[in-house]
Length: 265
Image 1 (cartoon, one colour):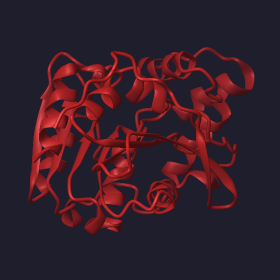
Image 2 (spheres, helix red, strand yellow):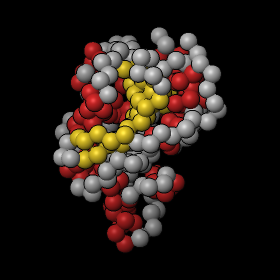
Image 3 (cartoon, helix red, strand yellow):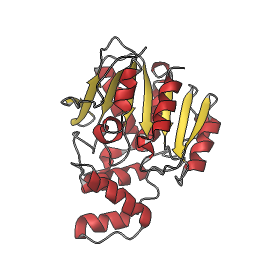
Image 4 (cartoon, helix red, strand yellow):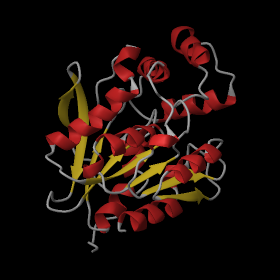
């Protein structure tokens, strides 16, 4: 099923829901709620607009006949940005996604996540497995999310303006600066909170049982770990996104088209 839609996807005003200790999560919806739903969860230092709207994902999913539901994860986009690391444990981020589905009365949805959103998805796929029949996890790390981020250098930058010298951390900082509204103190709290989470490494012995497409850029340093997670899933498949690294893979047409095809079953 396809529909004719304009080339550019309009960004609706956020609709807020309350989660956890009274934090607001910004949510967005496109399409009729009678259509099959896909929920989109973005990566670290990104947002719904940056990860999914500007790259054409929302447009292409709508053209394929889906209703699209997305959220700005806490600490990102138009959502609240607390500065305490205790507000960003992995379990809380997964619960936020589940709260969005509950609030929108979505009984079943396919899941698409990238980077941090994919790591959160590994949890969601198991927490509410009957409600998530199919998923796409892009750029998912097999260890601690943001493990390559030098927290001391980010902290020195945020508190004293000390330049970052670590190349990988520099890339994260550039991403932070590129996306409007990012709060470096909140993003530092996210990285710190994730490292303090219990059982933060995805456990291959308890992998999702649903069909899952794993996709990682050929130039991404985490690709072998992503392949290992795909191999651990009974119904896992792996897509190597050609000539893409961790920070530009979401914009790949190859990734987008493969994901839409996979979701169609």
